[in-house]
Image 1 (cartoon, rainbow, N blue to C red):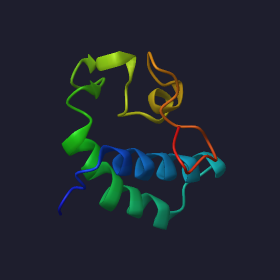
Image 2 (image 1 turned 30 degrees about the horizontal axis):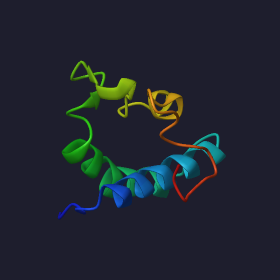
Image 3 (image 1 turned 135 degrees about the vertical axis):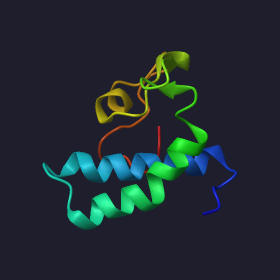
Image 4 (image 1 turned 120 degrees about the vertical axis):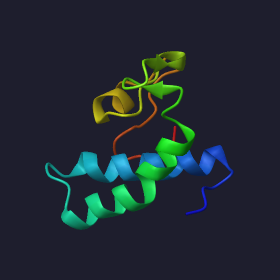
Length: 88
């Protein structure tokens, strides 16, 4: 799978996925499959090296390998705003 080169697109996809998940108490099977197939690989390739509790790295205070970390945001504010699919 080819990863997008535009960081804004990566963040927009990420925000959309988490916004959808935030609106529903339990993600649907289709939503989880979409996230695992389309979003997680991008996060793994482009984000987790610097923003992952598993890698002991929280550059800018931002952790993206958990839902709570993404909602909490980092030093520059929230990474994801529930319901806002246009990004922050």
